[in-house]
Image 1 (cartoon, rainbow, N blue to C red):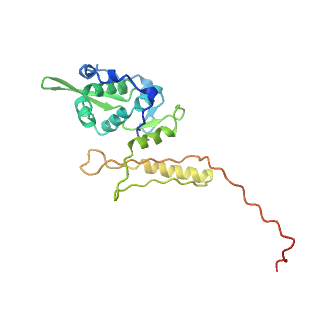
Image 2: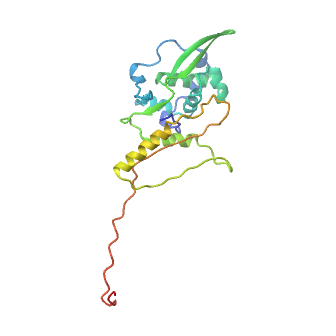
Image 3: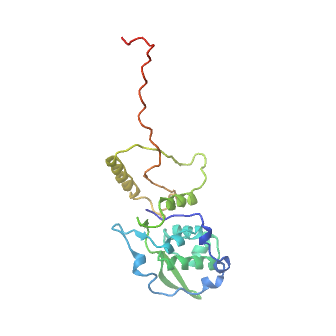
Length: 228
């Protein structure tokens, strides 16, 4: 399960004056461990398992979501992130700090450059997975897809459909396995020379669709002639 975008929840919004404080970006981030062991829990496939409210709050901000998608491509400095996201280093520095404190981003390396040093930040894991007991559910990913989705353009590949299937438990489990395999298929990475980003949201869910009982047969009409 890949990472997500979220439309901003007003209850999660930070003080804009703090986010725009350029001094935040200029202060070097301290080296060392970026999060405790509880924030680095992974499953068998190596996905970082998201469970804490701090992690979901960090990912729930649209700026930080876009930042995570950029860092999925490669480690980057505050200057590089500010350039690609079109924001000040102060704003970027603030959001990187929030992601780091949530255990989602780490300080990867520090390089000496003319006039000082540059710090490169990377994702703790290239893929995230929502814990089954987390307070959020599939709507977290649905909102993520809506936040990333660009308007359709004539002639450009795009397909969205909603279907309802009546499946036995065995059929549903078999379809789930096929969808998991599809989601795990390798694809071109962001550093390839060709290609542009597309989103793929895969979901199999139990639907709240009432089922009609079988229709009752018509009562025979006493005035109708007998059937031959």
